Image (cartoon, one colour):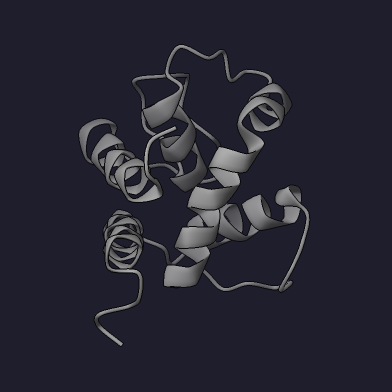
Amino acid sequence: MKEVADVLAESREYIEKHGWTQHELSRSGAGTSVCSLGAIIYSQYEDVNVDNEDHVYDQHRGEIESVIRSLIKAGVPVTVSESPFTTIAANITGWNDMSERTQQEVLDLFAKAEKIERAGYDPDA
């Protein structure tokens, strides 16, 4: 897999191109609006059938988890400090699905996480 920072950038670009949604991975598959987790998956695995989300998670769990951990480090609230992947994914999807969340906030989070990954620390802190 690519560097985590590259995946974060591509995920952000995917949302910019296809749009953002809440309460579902995507509107109807690759090439449609996606949530934060959907952006990570579809930007990297467009050829994968993600109708069965468990299959995608099982196949790419470590890679996806690394990207999600970067987003959490950049600002997604964490309810459990060390947790199984499903709880980690729930943190990003829960954050994404908050009623007050905006597409711009999601894009900003991806950009901030990418910046932290490239620098190795939060240059804005």
